[in-house]
Length: 356
Image (cartoon, rainbow, N blue to C red; front, side, top):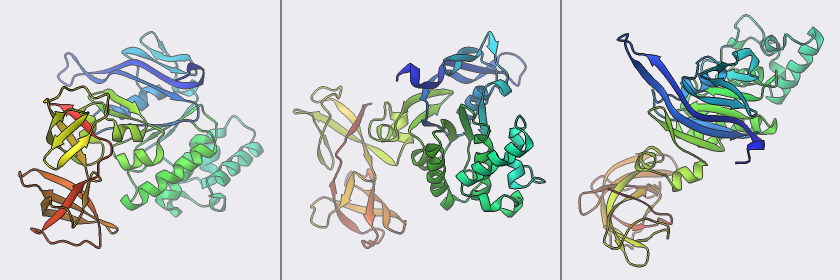
């Protein structure tokens, strides 16, 4: 990435806490690296306890760096020898619970962070940001009178109004209904992009991450294992952990064949030419739910062992002749019974393999 365009750069960041036993340390963030360009939306994705929220706190200035450094616009703001206070970092934060002031109106909530402006200008700027998040008609309302999605947009407008260099969002959708999250993630992305805001959020939900982010970092044990576009993470995971974590799939046994092919129980698949394997090598082949299609004319049969109705489609769990179970997405008008055998065929156009 062009360093002139890099807004946030984290280099070999390590954050430790004293252990609860009172001797030694626990490492929360361990050698973490990432770069985020101006106008990009990034996301740290991982399970609870992987260190993702600690990274946000360190960027804000709430956690000191034990080693490594954090740079904003090529200026070091955190290192073992330097710690710029949070209020001097030009970083905005949207908290998990939105943290709106219940006794202030929507307009007053947004104006609260604009104390450096004259009173009249403060209201003008606050109204402009309300307009940008399509809530100008709610200026006189109080937070409890708004829906969860509206409160989220107020919290976002309040964070953006002082025009920080970077917006940080800590699990911004976790308090909202599941069916709202993806739609609101798309809305938030549109607002951030329309205002050329650089943002970094953390979440444990990959659908949210994929809906909002340009770049996603899969975290485990305090490290970013792969920092990439959602497409690359899904189709070109760097290791088996990421392949397991992203999407839904299973690994089946395969053997490398001549001509960049791999033989699995269901047939032969084309491999990328850059695969690292020799003819005859045994590998694990990742089969995702969209790699297998229902085909009544196929001689290959699989038994339906579980099914989940999802409206437009069923997610079937299918047992192959060997006993291995795989997933398949099937249009919902194909309603097969548990125990029924159906025809299937391979439809994988990008094959992911790992050596055991």
